[in-house]
Image (cartoon, rainbow, N blue to C red; front, side, top):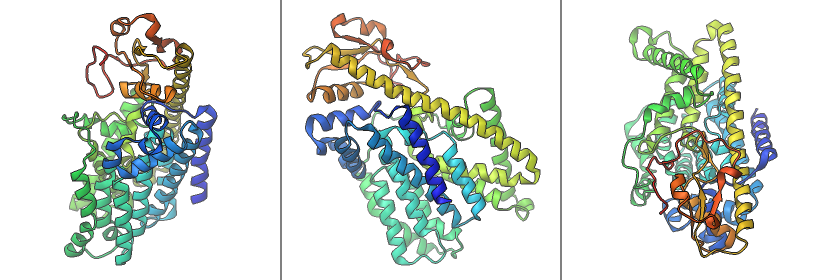
Length: 455
């Protein structure tokens, strides 16, 4: 089963590669650093301090592998295959093989974490997820020895220093997984286990990598549809109906567990729904102050919570299994709808990668040597489903550093009036080069900040 899961994820990687492996968005920032300043300068000083594990991975993917996107995509595919296998093995600690396999398959099938499979800047997130699952596998037993606790804590610490968003779930797992596996509850022992993550917590407090510019609470109402609606199926009436049905099902399962009248009649399905919900919440909390938009580039926020969503979906299926015909038909419909969404999202990522390569070639043709004047892309970015070839100034500056091995003035306009302030000799029209079809108002950047002019 583990081999089958790994092969299925590898097959998806082959599909991505056949469509065209490439670089997009923040990939160019790190690629430019590596080309202009050397491998160890790839992530920049801030990333190395805030996320040292991510810094090392960026040195590998964009420094050592830089210019060879297929190599980075191969690493992402290996991480996805490892995640699917580990999801199965972790679930197997608590469940029979059938629901364990179902959770792994549902996670692999649903398309609300596509960025972790294609976008090479997400390698640290994917690696942090694998490390967290590996630590969970070590500690998910009733008779946890001290050396196993220490090993799990080490894995969780490395994961947290690679991408800090996994820390809340790591803490929950280190304390709660042995209890779920049958260990007797002991407050003293659990506090001692939690203390093993104090060094990681202290480091994260001292060197926070959360963007200081984001000070508002993100639209967390999108969490539910991101896992049970338009995050896993195409947006539209079908997604709205699905999220209502899933929300009702989740609420009923939780109510049956909470109300003493029904608790005795509950089973593994209701418990899976509740645990899946806890994982979704724990995975989402670190992104509360981000503009949570779990589509395209934004679905990297579901690095942990998408696993909880898969657990909850399988739990709902088990609860409803007494009406097997309904579950089978409903599962088939959901599978087809989610496959449609996955095809759309794969197409966006691979098309954006192609756009990025075409834009890079066009710049090289127009400016065979480094220009002393600003190179301006526009009249605005082309963004579809939260995916784009280039979206902000750091993307374009990184591309220019990569092409010319030095800092070249440049940027991207967010409105035609800003684009046309520059003479035609400095402009590169990305609308003519892009095959993506813009579906949003691009007078704002990806963090929702209004842009009226080039910096």
